[in-house]
Length: 403
Ligand SMILES: *Cc1c(COP(=O)(O)O)cnc(C)c1O
Image 1 (tube, protein in one colour):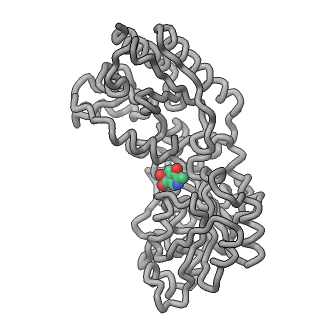
Image 2 (cartoon, helix red, strand yellow; image 1 turned 135 degrees about the vertical axis):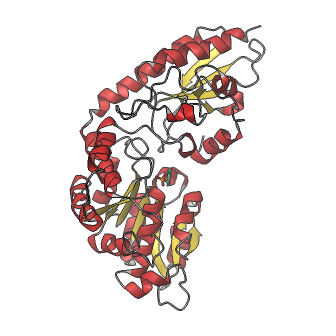
Image 3 (cartoon, helix red, strand yellow; image 1 turned 30 degrees about the vertical axis):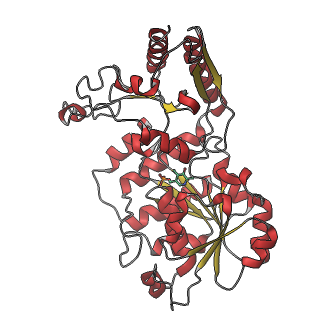
């Protein structure tokens, strides 16, 4: 399923109105040790086991402990925000094989600030004119492949540019003009487009047009963090709060030194610009940095095996009910993680909506809706002790519905 379809399915599932039993089995691992208050309970919010994935509507991913510690520890002193961006940005850039980097308020913000930087350069007047490009002497168009025109490109049009979609190299060459500000590429849609990364870059280089790639959710593998810089993309955008498990409200914009410097002209602490509302403070910058460092140092083969082992536990339990099929789905480019599809013989198992039953059960469990009423389950957002709970709850629901 495409990410957008997954999101649609998520929002289509009716919300459980139930309050109470809040997080009986789910400990809030990040709660400050000094705090005795259970805010979820206090506000009547039901927490859940996340067998679905890192979705914004489900509050993203759980931050790595080290990242949360960094936030708490850096929250108690002041320092100059520009200096934090300078110094942490420099370190991030070296990890990512980039000339320069900045921490943004999510990948969406990276797209938007990167676009603003491409348009304005370091000209303060132009910075303050975005998104009113008419009569500003700024370029006004971004070229992308038709298949790459997903909802996130809205970040670019926020800066006032017009999206020009093309399908073939001939169309691309024809579309390029002195209005072309940038050529934009979305990694996870690459298999749907006719032009691949290298050719896209060659064409951009030939016409001296800056390039940007959105790879927001395309981790693992961690090598993707530097792959696109090594290839030659001028700007790379990634989320900090997805598989990396940094603060959910962070992202990274990395790339050419002059373009990052230009993007920062549209970012806080500066005002009179389009990005003033996309603030990340020092704590989040440090939190993201620690999460990134940790993510890069993780043994990803070992982690992958753990994710597969967990999926195997759930698959085995589900498939122990006659008429149930539990199979790994092929890996997409985005959210590239082991995902189990659980489907059943509708004549043997009468189950209206397994996803909703799991959500309304105790503990509440979130899964993704799969094709034809089936469910998709992932294991990367589960805590260790939750794997068995998910497995047995799924089995219980399927078993109960067996006729
Ligand atoms: C999630 C996502 C974004 C937005 O990322 P945030 O970090 O939530 O701002 C942009 N593009 C793609 C392809 C994504 O999957």
